[in-house]
Image (cartoon, rainbow over all chains, first blue to last red; front, side, top):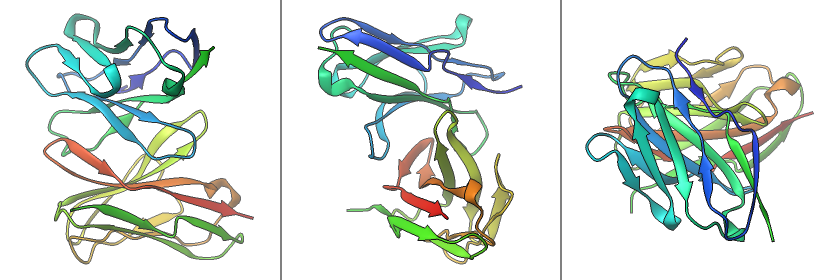
Amino acid sequence: AQSVTQPDIHITVSEGASLELRCNYSYGATPYLFWYVQSPGQGLQLLLKYFSGDTLVQGIKGFEAEFKRSQSSFNLRKPSVHWSDAAEYFCAVVPMNRDDKIIFGKGTRLHILP
Amino acid sequence: DAEITQSPRHKITETGRQVTLACHQTWNHNNMFWYRQDLGHGLRLIHYSYGVHDTNKGEVSDGYSVSRSNTEDLPLTLESAASSQTSVYFCASSEKGKQYFGPGTRLTVT
């Protein structure tokens, strides 16, 4: 079945440590790929997106993501997290030829230790 | 500036009542979407529309309806509210793969 999987429901890292949040998708063709962040009680903010081209995508707040076609993955990374990065992160895809219908993963809650 | 708004931002209603959540966008986008967000489920698609008079069911459409009489608005109606519909609802519009989300409506059904 077509799906977006974020295998980690919760992740805890220390402030200043590096971060990688995993995302895998199962669609036949390469979809459009997105990462969103949601702080408690807030709406969704787009961190970065991949449509085509360079497979390493830079986003806001120091985040980057790498598209790996062979692994059907689009993992989000940050070299050094800050306490303000504590939030929920959603991977999302728009399957090709599906007229912008976005499918979300279930999210990963990031906790930061001081 | 173009934007997407939702109203009300918070709503408390009783089981069995009809409730309508408003979504209005000023980008003139043809594509509009309604999602609900629940703990452990992420965002799930309820209904979507690709243009005036077009509506389609999403993943969790039971108990919800939408209508699209103009480009700017896609109201979401809960015909008979149930406690299981307590959630945060997000509206979005999109063009060429980029989605713009509204601020959300927190609905509580008691």
